[in-house]
Image (cartoon, rainbow, N blue to C red; front, side, top):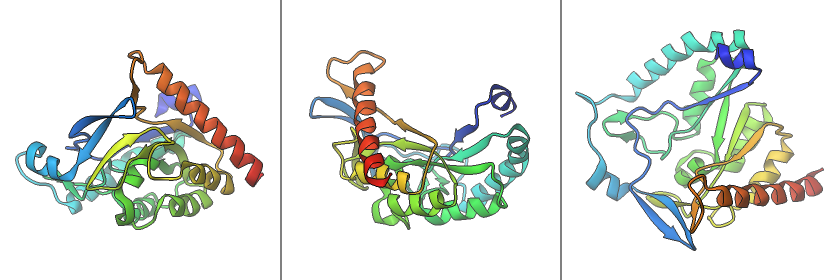
Length: 234
């Protein structure tokens, strides 16, 4: 955080989900390859207790509170905002460890622990939030209106998925179930002025290891959405 402050980098994104599992398979769809997650496959084929015992939500909250008490003052001194990423995928417990940031109330509690510090904020991963569907407490648009309206959004991961849990695969922004234009429009409506980045870019058939073609596809699509949103919202 101190080094970021010296370099003038204003945001540090982080997550807080130990013992996490992101992927149960990879799928090919419309000429690209992307990660898939299935709750059934995870529970039956992948999940294991990674530590000597299970860890409850109360214990993980105590760890998060300890971490923030130690680190958030350093972020403030360095003028860097810590931007909390939601748990991906948003399941209440994985591999014997409870997860906290799988719904709106988790974020509200974390914000209360930050005691109104302007150096606590959100990395709103649109893909992760879409994975949870109606179990998130608020949908993506409500999250933008709530936290964006209070200037808490610091980074947007612009990603789409095929469907909510119990099974999804990642998609390009124009190929999932969420209307990504409406996401861009809502960001403009709350006057969000931070960074919006492609996230977990699927691998196009024939693309190189750096996935430059997929990156170009995402950025071009996002710029088109932004132009339309600017024209409509002003």
